[in-house]
Image (cartoon, rainbow, N blue to C red; front, side, top):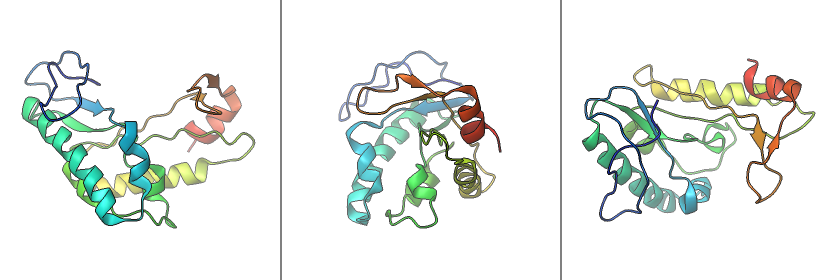
Length: 167
């Protein structure tokens, strides 16, 4: 799996430091564009979310031009807020449809709480949304953050297995 592309810099979009994959690459490419747009994905305002989707699709289409055979999507997308049955977020279906792969994450930090049901539902919903037509690459990590310091802490083995790995 590649997380980068060579010379992936659209003149109207922010610069990205991306590495090398061959032009005929057919594997997975996960674009990480969380940044300032990420929190906006949780808006219930469809116009606002569509603006974010337009930005993501511009990046996606450019990547697809460079690597037309690759399976391309975004790190952590769809978000857990999108697959929550009680969600009030605006629709992200247009971006789901545009991606040729989905890369949901199952990161959690609720020590002592069993989140495996909710995370399993998140993955199942992403699989449903893929309609069996695109791969779904689920990301887990033993790291978590308590504040804005970043992901500096590690779950103990039992917590990690309980919440993020065990079905």
